[in-house]
Every structure is written in structure tokens, then in C-alpha cells.
Image (cartoon, rainbow, N blue to C red; front, top):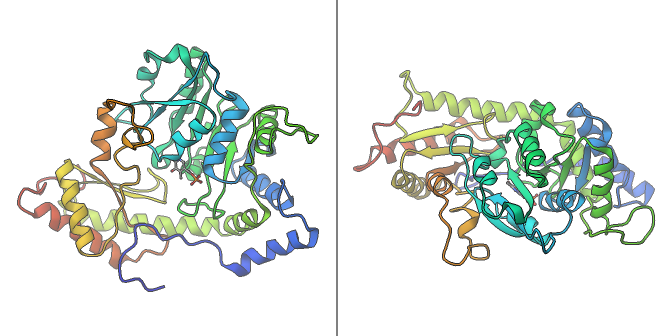
Length: 389
Ligand SMILES: *Cc1c(COP(=O)(O)O)cnc(C)c1O
């Protein structure tokens, strides 16, 4: 495919022929959804890849529905006594959308700027904690939060914790011990994520009875009969999407190697000839520190990021502020009078998504970095700051 611009994200899912081999199995059975054989096989193979028992993976129709299913299977719907859910605003809108679909009023908490994840001291000290029925932690850009610390938070506060680790599937593959028996972790298999079923997701939770509830709430609250026994939704992954996932899994080791090549090129080309690296006006966050779906430029200053963004756009290199200015300022969620979250705001104004794709060429990477360097050298630019800083 020839584009006349460098896209920020260019998904590449398995070709139709490889998916078709799996779809034919569904055709032969005339079974197309409701935890069919392909969805179950995908769950089994993912659990095996994570080195966990089979029940540890339950598929969902999207990353958002996986969050909803994990909430309904644990905290359940919000109650009048505990109407609030605490969550970070440094995330994609889906985190707050899912919380709200379960009846909770989202209350945004700042992040720890060192880890990018929920500030647990701020959660513990939050004035609404006694009226909080859910804490949704997030693994931003695929950076996994400290799951052991979240288990302790849940234990200490008595408030259920769920982790939206939508983009952290690779991090979990590399550290499967972080999976919990008490805190469910959800992932997204959206086309923009590294491992994809097109649309899809999963709840990862090493808890057999808990996962039986996930299956129940994902299928209208049914368990065994056609009676709704609890709150629920339709969060089921179809056999068609599972077929894409199985074909994707067949080639996933090769895919990860392709991403590693691109990340390596970014790293090598950003370091230039000097030991300090090129003067880009900020630093790069590359896989595997973040998900392979992202290459992030952290500008030293907010004006520096604006300049970099404009310079890249002018040369037809697409960028994205993946989390915008934070969910807490999006019109549906912004509290009246606003809410100050300094660490979230600072990072959102300095973090820019650069192009990333498994087949991104070294020439496109070099172009992207050249433009960053030129923008940093503009009058008023952050020229003195080098990639290594
Ligand atoms: C991608 C993403 C989601 C949503 O996943 P979908 O599969 O698109 O529903 C939720 N949270 C975060 C942090 C994400 O990156």
C-alpha cells in the first residue's frame, strides 16, 4: 500500500486466506457466537501463552466490554451508598465510558508522573473514598501498573479494583506473574493494538469462580438457564473475530520481531553519532517500555511539543495526542467548574504519538526524527535538549 503521508498507526491484521481456514470450522459447525469453539480455543491458547490455567482468559467483544464485564463480575452495578468510581484521567475515553455504563459516576484522580499510573496515595486520601464502589486503575500506553500494590490497595480499602490494561498484552506476556487472583486485568484486541481480533478484548484473571461470573455477565446475566440472574450485557466475542485472533496468534512471534526491528531503528537513528543522542527537544519512549503500538515523543516543554506537532504535520507525518488533554476535560465528563490534575495535564501537553507500524521503513523513521530535530532548532526551540536526557 502506497500512502502520500506517514500514518501514525497502520494496522496489519492477518490476510483473509489465513482467517478463512478458521472461519470454515465455524461454518462446518453452524456455530457463530456464544463462546463457540474458536473463541474457546483462542482463550485456551492465550492462557497457554501466558502460562496460566485455562480459566485465566475470558474473551470479550471489545476492550471496553471487557472492562464492563470485569466491573459487573466484581463490584457489580453502583449502589446508592457507593455511587463513585475513582480512575485516572490519563487514559482513553473508554475507561470512563465503561465505568459509567456500570452506573458509577467517574471521579478523576491524578497520576504519579514517575510511573504514569494512578497516584495511589491520592486514592487513599480521597475525600470520596468512603462512597466509592470501584477503583479503575489503568495501564497507559501498555505500561503495566504495579498489580501487587493494587491488590494491597483493594485489601486495605475494601474497594474493588479493576485494571484497564488495554494496550498491555505484550507486557503481560513478558511478566505473566503480574496476573492476579483478586484483581481482574482487562486487555483490548482492537485493530490499533498490537495483538488484534479486529474488535475484541479479554478479562485476564486467575480466578475460576470470578471468571464464571465474567461469562455470566457477558451473556445477559445467564448462567445455565435463560434467566437473567444478575446485571449483564452482551460482551461476547463472535467466532469471526476469534478466527482473526487465532490467525494473528499463529504469526505473533514474527510480528513481535517486526515491531522490535522498528523500535530498534528508532533507537539507533535517534542516538545519532554522539553519545548524548540527537537534539530532538525531548526524549522518546519506545517499545518494550511502552506497547509496540506506540512510539511516544516526550517534549521537554509544551510549546516544544506544539512546534514538533506542527512541523511533522507540515511534512505530512501524522501524529496523535492519543489521550487528548485528559478525559477530565472532555465535555461529557468534565465536572462543573473543572478539575485540576497537574501531572496529567503536564504530560498530556508534552506527549506526542509518533508513527509506528510493524512494516515502517527506516527512511520514514529517519524523516520523522529529522523533522523533530529541525523543529527543536527553530528559534525558541528546545535545541539544547538531547534524546538521551
Ligand atoms: C484501546 C483502549 C481501550 C478501549 O479498547 P476497545 O477495544 O477499543 O474497546 C480502553 N482503554 C485504553 C487505555 C485503551 O488504550
